Structures are given as C-alpha cells and as structure tokens.
Length: 225
Length: 358
Image (tube, rainbow over all chains, first blue to last red):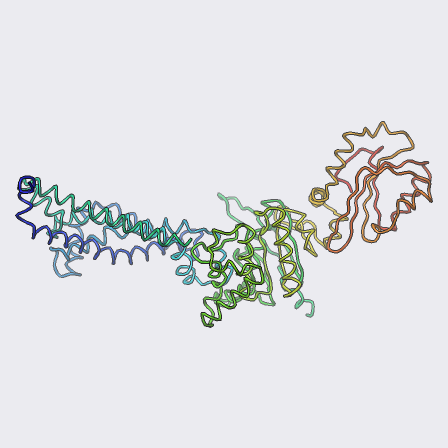
C-alpha cells in the first residue's frame, strides 16, 4: 500500500529523518538567539517610545527605522545579501549552521515588533503604580513589563516560531538542508511528488505541535491569573 | 522654619504645560499648595480641571514645567534618580482603577514594593500579610486580583501603598469606580489609617460627598487653578465661588429642594405676610431650638418644607426651607437676630429666586 503511494519516500527514510532534524535545528537554534535579540529590541522600543519609562525620541526613531528596514527585505534576498556577515561569523556561507545567521536576522525584527505590541498591552496604570512605588527602570522591565506581559509574549513567540519554520524551508537555497530543501531540490526537481507531499506533512505536524504545546504553556501561565 | 517642617507637602508656583498640536495647554496654572502633616486634604474639581496632573506632581510622576516640589522637606526636583525613587517610597499612591498586577497574587502585589529591600523572603511575606490584615483581606492572600471585587482590589492597593511605610498617601479618584457603600467603607479605612498612623492623605475627587466624609481641608480646582480653599466646614457653609456653590449644593440636595419647592409653590402667589425663606445653620445653631424661640418671641409661624442636617468634619450643618408667616417688622427683626447665632437666611420669595445664592 505505502509502496504504491509513496514509493520514493520509502527509499529515502534516512534523508527524511536527517532533514527533520535539520529543520528543528535551524528553527530552534535561530529561535533562541532571535528571542534574545527580539526581546531586547522590543523592550528598547517600548521604553524609549514617546511616553515610555525612558523616553528617548532619537533612540526610538533609529530603532524603529532599523526594525522596519530589516523587516522589509524579502527573506530569499536576505539570504544572499547577508553572506559576508555569515562568512565572518560562521566561517562559511553554506550549510545548516550558516543558515542560522540569515534566519536570525530575518526573524528577530519581526519578533521585536510582536514583543513591542505585547508589552504595550501591559496596563499603563500598573507601570505608573510601579513608578510611584519607587521602582527603577530595570525593575519595571523585569518585574512588571516582562512578567505582566508574559502570556502575550509566549503567544507571539508561538507565532514567531511558526513563521520561522516557514523561513527554514527557504534556506535550502543556500544549501542548508532541511525539509524545505528535500521538498524542492529532491521532490520538485525530480518530479517525485510524494516526497514533496510528505515533506509538507512533516512540516505541518511540526507547526501543529508547536501550536499545541505553546497553547498549553500559555494556558498554564494564564491559569493563575 | 517650624512651619516649614509641619508642611509635609509644599508645592510652590507649579505650572504644568502640555504641548497639544502646537498649542500650549495649561493643565496646572500657578498653583501653590501647602499640606500639613496628618491632614486629610481634598482637591475637588470636574474632570479636566487639572487635579490629577497636580497630584502627580507631588511624586513627580508628572514633571512640572515650573515650580518647586518639596515633600518631607526634600526638594524633589533637585534629587538624583536613585534618591527620587527613595523619596517616592515615602509617598504612597492609590488609583481609580487600582492598577494591581494581574500576574501576582494578592500577597505578591503587596510584596512588590518590598522586592528591592534587603529583607528575607519570609520577613517580606510576613510584612505583606500584616498589611493585608490591616485592610481586612488576609484570607485572600493567595488569590489573584481578578477574583476580587472593586472594593477589595482597592484595599489591596492600599495595603501595597503602605508597604514602604509612606508619610503621605495620594488618592487619585480612588473611590470613583466604586459604589456608594464600598466608597464609604474605603473612606472609613483611609480615615482609620490617618488616625492610627498619622498618615497625611491627599485625595482628589469630583464628589463633594467624599470631601465631606473625611477631609479636613479642601481646595477647589478649575482650569488648572485653585479657585477656593479652606477648611471643609468653612467652604461648605460659606462658599465664595460659583463652582464651589455648585459642588456644595449638589451634595446637600438643597438646590434640588429649592427647585422642587419653587416649582410647586408660586412664590408670587404667597400672601403679603408670608415669605419663603432658606436657612443655613452652622455649628451649635443646629442644636438650639431657634425656631420655637422665634415663634414665641416674635410671634411668627413656620411651615417647614425641607430640612436636612449634615456632619461636616465633625461640625453640624443644617439646611432648612420654610414658609414664615408674620408681621413685617418683627419678621425682619427675627431674621436679623438669627445671624449672630450662626444662622444665615435668604428670602427666596419676593426677590428673584436664584438657587445658586446661599
């Protein structure tokens, strides 16, 4: 039965396992670093924006423009454009690890924007209350913004990881491997449609898994409130 | 200098100007305000009068454009950020919408201001629990604020504000989102804290009822300025400004009563020997049987249409509207003789009736 439906897939089980690991590695490897950068940028945007706790018009406007600029570059072009930086950081411009650099640069401004919106939803009155109690900006960031905004930050993190899975499929263009690469350079190029199809199914399973696990975590955090 | 120390808050020549699409908006316009230690000071005004901006100047949540802010003897605008944050811990604040953290338990919220202090977790929790006991919510320590009623949330906010042992408590419309019964309970709690801890309270409100219940002194704000101020008893019984009179009459129901009476009785139809009179008694006058004395001494008869007695900052204030019947000469003499007793009268009939004159 399976032999009939997905003959080519059965012949390359090993490649599929390998590709799935590569996709997971690219997704979570870049997610961890992008999370740090994105949180940092998102927090900076929130605190420096007009009315923020460390209001600074110039800093805000520079950060805001950089964020917009980076978000405007199509990812497939970013992959190529960024290769000198990748060469500098990783020592090569090709391969799974090399793809982490464009993935991080491609996703963290998006994440920063989402974090910014999540933190803006934290009641301004609560921030004001913390200020009135003599909290310092650092205390307000860690004890109020990030804590009160935690459920929303987790929610946007899920969305970001799912976008990131999408981006990893494009990284095949620089020889990153992964499920996207299998789908295009094997399935599509060799007219082995079953390969393309199964690669898509695995990606969908990953996406659903991230969504479901993420929702459970959000629920656990919100359960208390 | 002795007087300076007794003023726990001293705002000097405060101006707050907002730029609004190129136009300058004066939210606070040249305000001077001194508040004595242990006082309960009310600031009343309609929304947009600048009262909220003014109280935010006290802890510099709002930086004034001009003026000096002296609290607990410190010029706050001269302080470095670290020192300002220390000073802010001595100025508690509660808000209309409570502003509790939803991700922390009730106990966690009260613990929050103590997180930066060098005390053990156990000490911190004990202290927070003691504060919760003070506001009567110790059994809710491990609940999340979302499960509490408005009045309970405000009690938590009060406990939180007290955690750093402030000298001053600023209440920014703290009862405006609460029903009358809860408002009363919260105000009683504030009064208790004022009595027991000697806490100076500055509260802003648009309800004269709130001022009447607990304040000793009051300032009336309009368009960024303080237009009238004094002891609550004085402002209540002898308001100078139209706006003040409005606030007073809304809270005493006198205006409504005058309107109702003049709507049902056509004052021009009254016989010549009758007049519609509004009496306002202050202090001891309410305790004496002035009216019966009047009728005996001057042989005038009264028909009481409306009467009410209020307690304002411990003083009795009475209001009465009555039709007085009698001969003209003794009648005028009677009204004249009431004045030294602290009774003010106004003849509502004959002269054009204006409800806003007391």
